[in-house]
Amino acid sequence: MGVNGLIKKVLTEVGLDHRRFDLKWASAAEAPRFVKLITEFTARIKELGPLGEAEGISPEEAKKRAEKALAMVSDRKLRMGFGNLTKTLRKEVPNLSDKAIDQAIDEKLSKTLSSLSD
Image (cartoon, rainbow, N blue to C red; front, side, top):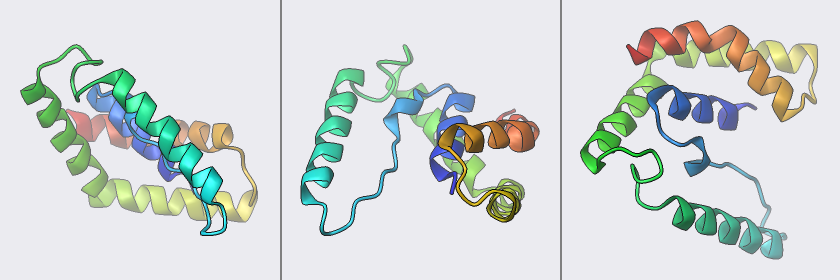
């Protein structure tokens, strides 16, 4: 719950285009859905171009920002905060929309994300 929102928030925080990440589920029985998801994502990545191109930065800078994003999501404080947030959300409202989850991430984790991006 909310991994998509968290990763997109982290990518935005470090200055990378959040459209470079998308997490969708498809079961083994949903081959046409899987093909559609992969085809759409591949087309989006081709449209964005190599990492850094859509962001208007050099490949070296894009790599630094990607490494920063990895460090952020690897941080214990952020992982604990995200875990606690998802636990709370599951108890309060088990079927939240993606928008509501994104809003909760903004409200509860923005301060932590900002401190990690400095």
